[in-house]
Every structure is written in structure tokens, then in C-alpha cells.
Image 1 (cartoon, rainbow, N blue to C red):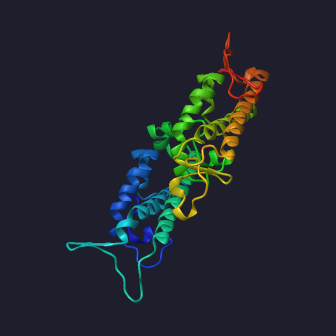
Image 2 (spheres, rainbow, N blue to C red):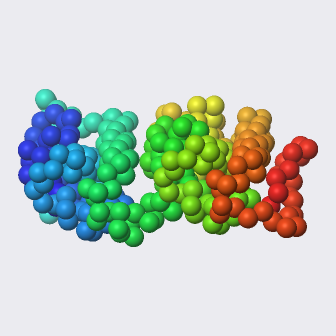
Image 3 (cartoon, one colour):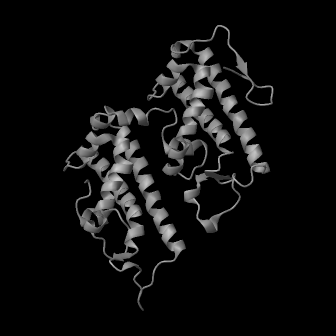
Length: 314
């Protein structure tokens, strides 16, 4: 367990009153297993479980602890708010204290999960900058999964469409991002170039193409998500229903599929995704020496993605 005592736990939690490690320990273990281990792998988790002296590794360890502390408390809150005895489940209340309202409880629970998501995203970005310090992660299957998509970070997606920096929203969008790659990106630039661009790029032209492709992926992902009732999409951005409490409800894409805003959003994102792909192809054809993985189709087929005159060769 990477958080071994109350002092470490309190370092990452902004809570009043007592915080006892023993009470939260089962949920810290579950948080490690559920949220951290799948992303960094067992070997890297084992490194964070030990005392470390390297400043960079120590920084990553503290981010991992911050994520686990907040995830753990998010999981602990429902049981921590009650007392379970042989006579049943009780809520403590006296003249000095009374239970939090449902609104207060839900907002607090959400705040822990948001803080955990942010720490986890920061951890992954931090580790990626120092491959020599985190070989256990870079050599693991977890890293392969992490790099599997062209848009593989919450921050990258949020740059091109506002998802409130929510990792939970990003994770929920991952299956659609994969479909978009297979349906729109791979047929245009080829599997070889797509795979190559998923790694870090230093060449100016390749960096620009990667950026344009990421913008295209995000645009097409939003296009395909408009009709998905799992998300709330409005003028502010897109987020999961978990991130919206009952009293915050506004217009959603589930109950207003014919809403003009959603129709326009779907059409606009379709056009944007297509236009970014056209820009990609133009750069590739102007700089063929920089994109040796690209093989132009001898007899390409074309598909109309929109009802405009613009087409993309698939």
C-alpha cells in the first residue's frame, strides 16, 4: 500500500476533523487496484510502495499517493457517513452536529473524485517526461494501452473540446475515440503512419500533422457522441452524468435529440473533422520525405462525410 499511515493520508486530504488510516485502509487498497494499477502496472506500483530517494521518482510517488488518497476517500464516504452495528445502520446526530444534506454529500464525493482524476492525469504526464526514471511503466503492457490512441490524455482532448478536464469523461469517450481512429483516420493515412504518429514526434511537419489529426479525432468523437445519452452536451462542453448533480440539470442530448444546438454541433464537428483531414493530406503530399510510412492508394475510393462539396479520400 503506497499510503501507509495517517500522516501521509492527511497530507493529501483537505478535510476537517480526524482522519484515521486504519478506517480508510480497505478503500485505499481498492483505489490502488481499481484506478492506479491498471494505468501504471504492478511493477511500477511496487516501486511507489517502497521508500524512494530520487527527486523525480519521489515527485511521481507523491502524485500517486494524492490520487489514491482522494479515490480512497471517495470510496470510503458512503460507509464513513453511517454506523453499522448488529442493530442496523445509523446516522449520528446530536445538538452540535447533524448529517450533511444529500446535496453536500454528493458535492463532497464529487470533489474527491475530481481531485483524484486531476492527480492521476498529472502523474501520467509527469512520468512520460522521464522514461529513464520509470522503466517499469514504459516496459509494461499498461504503457502500451495508455499509448494505444492518438488522443490518449484528458488534457489533449480538453484542448480541442471542453470536457472540464474530467478524466472520467475522457475514459468514457475512449471507445468512441478508438472507433473514430478505425473509421476515419486509419483509412486516410494508413495503419503504419497512424501507429508511428502515436509516439512522441520531434519533426516540425510530423508534429503539425499529429496535432491536426488529434483535432480531427476530437471533432469526429463529439460528432458521434451527440446522440449518446451517457453524456450531457451543451454550450459549455461535454461531461458525464456523474459530473452533473440533479439540481444542476439543464438541457441534455438524451431528452432533446432534435434540439437545434445539438444538430448544429453534430454537423459542424463532422465538417471540422473532415477539414482537418484534408489539411493533413496536403502536408503529407507536400512533404513526402517526412512521411515515408504513408502509401497513397492507387485507386482510392471516396466517401462523402457531409452534405457539403468537401470529400475525404478513404
